Length: 383
Ligand SMILES: *Cc1c(COP(=O)(O)O)cnc(C)c1O
Image 1 (cartoon, rainbow, N blue to C red):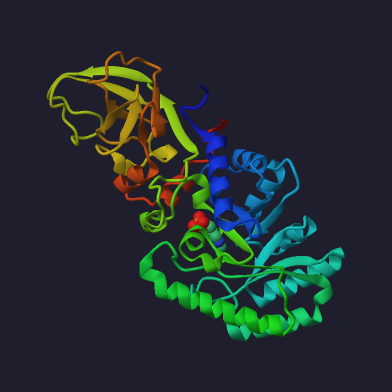
Image 2 (image 1 turned 120 degrees about the horizontal axis):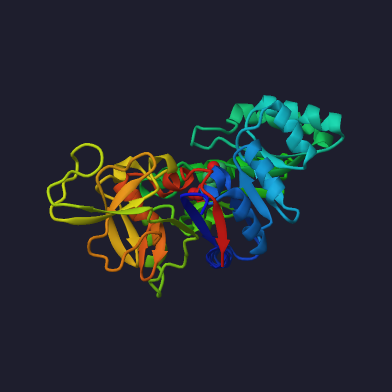
């Protein structure tokens, strides 16, 4: 084992999730697989490969570097949609490679048009509308200018989509705001269509919107967190499950994060463990040293809090999480030995450490915890 820990990604779990999501949206809605944030920590390269094997042909990323990694990783042609950052040189690269991209400012529209003319191509654009999130998107005045520009540059532009993004569809607290955004979006699109601006795809939904507001699905959904087997929030899950006969989570998590015991150490009662004095052995203890620490995304806030699985049993993190190692209490696990598998996240035997529990303990959201898993932990695909 060249690395001190590794991540397994389950292909059968992904297939299960994609089947579920497709059955929810039906055959007429395009499924776009959101792989920003290194595929939510799962690794763009292995994830893209298995996603294609599971039938995915449309991906969404944040920026050009992710699009480039994706382009190199895919085995078959796929649509790539850049939702966020592109500077002008990257814009040329994106148009050259037939990527689709969000446009939310007039100068990007003008630049895209000029580059498309130079390359003798048509830029495939998705106009992003400002509907109330107040992040990116054309407000009404800017949109009018963009439409005028589109009219006079039709040969360089293809209006592939008109889109927006909701400001927190995973919480009922934002219910009214989401509905207002949806209404604003629909009004603008209707007006644009009357003016002859017909997008191929209208799209607004992320995972939470897709589940909680089915009318947001339109022609395409942009699904991130749920394809990895996580619900956007406990609220979205309970809303989904309350309407069902079967009270069973339809999603399976893809990720297991594993390491091994590096060393075992007996510590007499009364001794302090590790740096400082945060943990004192209440009895004679057997500790396992695990070669994972905060440098690999195992949060320091899990000091004296976290749990791992060894031989199918939970073992508590004792003392502070160090940069490269942590100590766990294995006193009550019979037959424990050096090199035994340690599960930091995921399943072992009948037990599992979920990202949610892990996240609550370290006060990080699923999204944040997953995407913070460092790039240099190797990812392996398992069935
Ligand atoms: C991240 C993102 C999504 C996907 O969100 P999930 O909650 O992970 O499904 C969709 N659209 C945009 C614009 C995003 O930035």
